[in-house]
Length: 303
Image 1 (cartoon, helix red, strand yellow):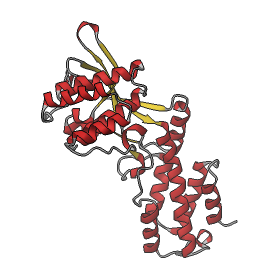
Image 2 (cartoon, one colour; image 1 turned 180 degrees about the vertical axis):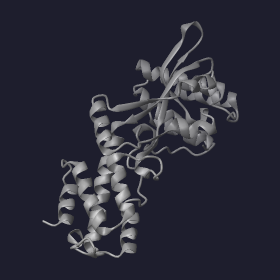
Image 3 (cartoon, rainbow, N blue to C red; image 1 turned 90 degrees about the vertical axis):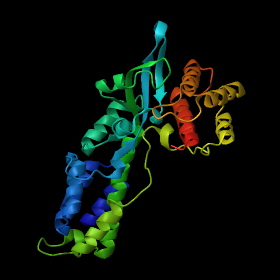
Image 4 (cartoon, rainbow, N blue to C red; image 1 turned 135 degrees about the vertical axis):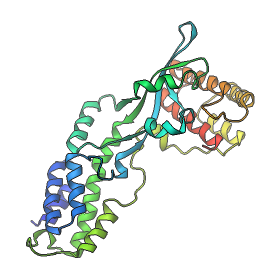
């Protein structure tokens, strides 16, 4: 069996060892004499060191949550933090996660977290005091974190397999014997290999996973500044008419979106709805509630 066929078979078999597949790709890269493919394979095996561009499939825009404390011992646990409440200069730091680890480390993270389904990445400790009570009126941020669904890590492994398969099929089309080429030969012209590499390894693809599946995949049919579309969307998500009326009152009371965070009235309403979700009054999970509310308000405010 040729090297190209071996790589194809391992790519198709989702139970095969991905590290073995990548090591075979290193042999192929050496025979193709393509430095970019060589570096990509090495980084997937050993991890990205910051000097090589991280592929988009290893970058994630997350949802954020926090614990809040208020007067009289009031507590708000696992409450969503709307991205609009985070200063623009800190958003990328606090709402994005890059996975630079090698494949073996990612596999270990999946095994360690598959039971509860999420990885938790805490915000730097010195960021919480910067927010005070600007997220929820009268409630001070004590601790915050990002949540990443384990499915995102699984998708990284799947994406690596898929891209190897696409790459090798294109190489086979150019020269079926490329995997057995003598060391001093050039089985596929270098510029052609480079073209195939960029098309199939670093090519543009859709968002393979959204980490926190609530935050990014839901279609939010809310138009900017359109209160009717906002309330219609939230009503379809199970929010009752009295709560929708409360939102209308809050929006009117706040007027335009403040420069930092949500308005006080909307913040109070958001906290109330999260609390209802936590108590089971609104029959939807806290995480899903967070995604529905924050994405809808962002769309309404045009963010």
